[in-house]
Length: 300
Length: 300
Image 1 (spheres, chains in turn yellow, orange):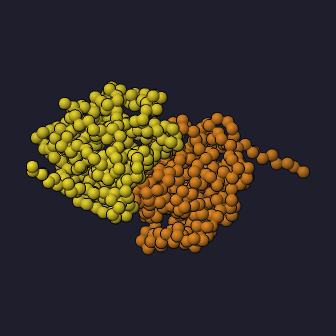
Image 2: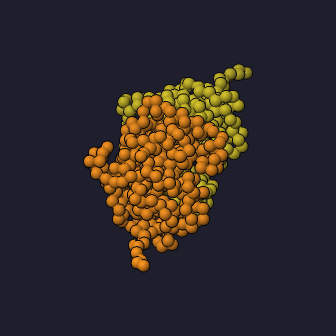
Image 3: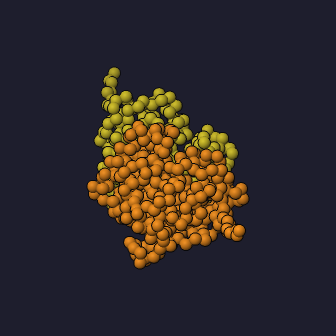
């Protein structure tokens, strides 16, 4: 009998009780090529450097209207609100996020498997991709809450068992993004550096962390260093546009006291060569609607 | 014996239990002239139209450093924190505002009476001016809280007995204002329209309203109409700059999750021909440190 010794070294340790520390990213950011299309070499280079790219007018006209109407319908549907995959804000009793919409909703399933989106994700990740997570996010007018700085990959690695940062998110705007209604903020270039968090993951952390970040949040000193070093890009742009960003981008958003709500469809594509296993730093994996174990390639 | 019949009609009724309604402003915005200086006709016209103006580099170099050091010293002084004129945020136990600094602090008293500031206020209001209120505002990094939309004049009229919107505020930035660290937002042109609020003033409203706006806050429908009609200007700019804005501007600011705090010195000048009397819509006047009854002209 031969025994294969696997290299089980965790390149992205986190929540291990050690001090917060910055680890250089070992994996490439862009794994596909310009030849594969649809994006050109300059766009891919921009993504590699900044960790994100924007797509103007991904959705327009009647399709955008359809999405917006569906968004409104879902937020007002009592069954959706009562569903375990919906996050309701305690204070206002309003729907904040609806998870797993690529499986529960026909309209959003379609866009999650649409070549306009999937081909770009494939090109960035250099392989077929599957949907790790999907959701609709509502940031209501006047009372929209903030999200503090975090790397999605840190959570997906720690709690969902995602081996490497070979995943990309797309946020499709269904409302206009102004600097003043709590838009996405990204520290460009931060995706090449991994912040290993100190605090261990509490039991059932996800029940808290979807509403307010808890474990995995970098300390103030490291965040300040990152902001001074990388700056902060504010992602403005009209409804129908989209932002694709690397799973390890340091990002956040402020609250929203303006009369203009901010809503988007959010889909996470992971490489089929990077499927999730056991969590790296959590007692048990998060539920299926937050971290899918269906690794079927999207858009095929 | 002759009896003088005074005209006691309140041109700016509010908090009277009637529905929220918009009343056109009766008083001029700019009451002085370009000839008086220091500002030219174009600057005054801009103020009249938009309800605010900005001054670059009002404070620079060593003076700015002096102000910043004093700001830091005050925020860390236990005596200041315990003082009744200091507002401490309940949740974080941090100093949020220090009132009456034009009387309690030598450094800020000096700038509050400095010709660079007072001459501009005089020119806008067309008379000598006195200080109705002064304060330092701290919006800390990471946890800075928002302020919802309001007109200062609505409060000063209802609770402080200020007859007409013949007052101007100056906010001197002691930190850089970015679109993302919760800067001042103004609806340009809103100052020519007065939103009469519905809700009556609760007893000792100021104890709550300095931390979180309560009575006097316009309803969501009117705010949305105003934002659609006037738009929202975001006031960015480096430390040492200042914004002067009309007392009836609709303004607000978002929270701040970034590593960059936002602090300013805030001084309100009222015309000596517009001194405060009995509140128009409150059981009793607010305390002296919030609404001064010393009408001595500033800077004389």
